[in-house]
Length: 466
Ligand code: TYD
Ligand code: MG
Image (tube, rainbow, N blue to C red; front, side, top):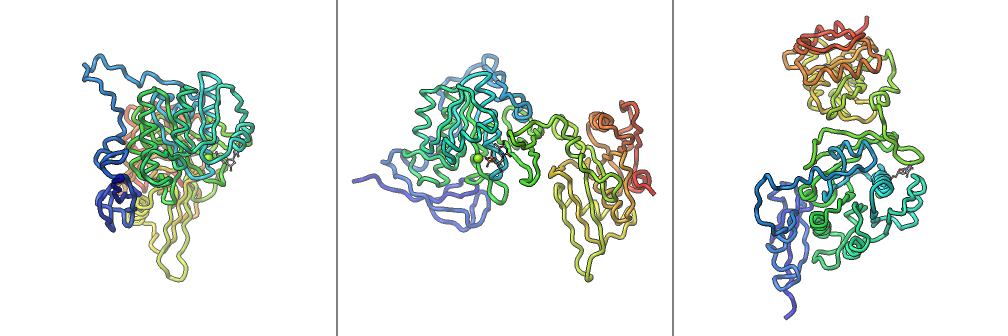
């Protein structure tokens, strides 16, 4: 009797497995996400369904007995630099040995370029690197390598999609870093799921994780992003790996932002900023300067806010456009780079607490340069930008604004004001509007006027020119 085959339904979103088809995943609640995968039954290579799952767990089966915590060696100490400062920063201070990093991003954003540059950097300064492309031929990789000047003889490239073969390469080359570009193109003939299926992606990732944990080799895998903005394939990939980085930016702009959405070895607040040039990605030393470079100085609706991205203050321009709604329709509200609901609340506060009749106005809010502002400290800037556009009165171009807006119209204190003020002073801004609460005991940079405001009305008085 041949091996019995079992059908199992796997959720494409979260990897939940079910023995029967369901219209909605009971685990992540996604509709229509279960897809059938056929696997060998109990007598097959991978045993039963239950055994498959334990086999594919993210952690190595190290088989070591428990040890006193004081004797444990921390992997975190064992880091190496990728030679790209901005990438090291996002990783939490360099790449941890034996860690597995997933890099996601839209097609064409520059993932392959970034990782080839890192591979070149590591191989020229530290040790061997294997770059495996499942999407491009060796010729194509070489073309890109020429563009960015990657020619280290410790950098090995291979066009391969068979993970079994890749693992053999790894044994013979013994690199310190391997890049798999991309995980969706990899398959292992010994794994039971069909090539290209979610099961293959998950199993290939699990195999690479096992390899990384047992060998101490760092692994970077590239993952594609779906239209909805999540990594294609099961979300479980994100749970399995140590670190998940997203490479973002607009294709028509040259700068790119790298951010960590998960990091077992560091903070997820840090961002790295790059600019795509002819010779590859260049690190941007002073992102504030870049983000403000095209600011229409003195235009109504434009306000500079001071945001914190990880440990780094960032000055960005918030723009608002407010205009009467046509044909007595429902007012349109659009927000890019800031949370839509947050904008709705801010507009309601402006209407009720500052007396701005925004009810019949279309409002568009945009953060220039494709940056995303997630901090409430940007509230006051958004409010002033909207008021400035509504009244058609510019905000003082020499002023930086920060503060959270409460429902009563009060301006609430924010964390870490000092680095923001220093960044503003560094870029030559003369005035900073901050929450009055933050004034106490504040170290003020010389040459910058600091104005504490208590509520939205006072803030508008000070910020808008007349
Ligand atoms: P790529 O790294 O292939 O993106 P991904 O792997 O995320 O799909 O980058 C592709 C884009 O970058 C492509 O539009 C060409 C551009 N590019 C440059 O502008 N300069 C360069 O030096 C390189 C290598 C690419
Ligand atoms: Mg690519």
